[in-house]
Length: 431
Image 1 (cartoon, one colour):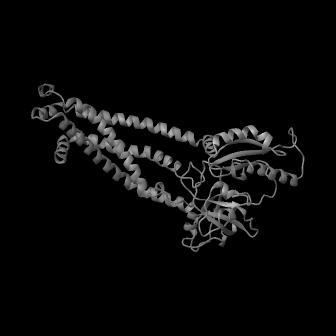
Image 2 (image 1 turned 90 degrees about the vertical axis):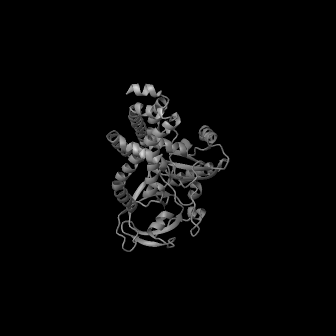
């Protein structure tokens, strides 16, 4: 069957050459359109590295001088109010852990801080940027977030409780950062002179986690910070106990906040789930809107490509009525004719796909490797399939191949089914 198929394709010559070139261009176009969507959706669905389903977010504000109900008080009273507020939150029967964080600066909030850093590794002169979040010691931060410490380091309770060192800046880094910068070494407690930040000390190492669900996977560090004065506006992250209904808890908390939570000048502004907050921040920053627009544009273009390719094969198949009539006159069944036409189209599609992939490979390999190398040099990243060339290329190529063959198959099958049943006499009269 395959030998006959190749002979038929070669015999049709120029007609199939134009179809072949069209399919090569379609392959390239599909790749350019589909690749960002596949990678974007894949990155969004990667594990965050912590259990976000049980995390709620409270936004706490404080009354300003002159506002109705404002109470003038010294900073010491402000600390008392802050501690009472956190005690009330932690004492809620549904809450397992709670921690205060700077307003809108927590994993999944889309707002992060960046710093240049140079770990002082001999021979390493690369300029790197590190994403980091601050946290307050003694506030159950690591237990609340559900981060996991590595076996050789302090457990999460110890990391949360250990006070800020006065001898220099401290960092809790992820496993990826540790393995990238100090491969094979035990770095907990390591002190080094950073080229930009001064004296740095590795306080702990935790498992990898993703700080932003809308960006490719990257590792982030955590930096302890002293609370020198009472926080005025901040967010509070709550980890609910297992089995608690998140929706009911949030609705109930909003209703009883004034009576049970508000303390001194502090009042609960909003509350919601971390998942809802991630979506809201994606809306505010235009990330979700951009994803929707790209998806809609891709669907529209892919629909046009599908119709164009299907129409090409439809008319190419219809032009072979006389040939099909001859096959019918020699006893070929309708099923055999359909299989013959489908096989020819699929083989032609596969040949076009292979040539298109070779053209892409000639350019993409260098571009991808160079781009990813620069990203890894500038920002530590942990490996996922979207950051490894061959898995990335193979997955996208497989999806493009399937879509291309669907277009070819649909465009061939419909006319092939109709003309496969034609009467030989009618077919010869058509000539």
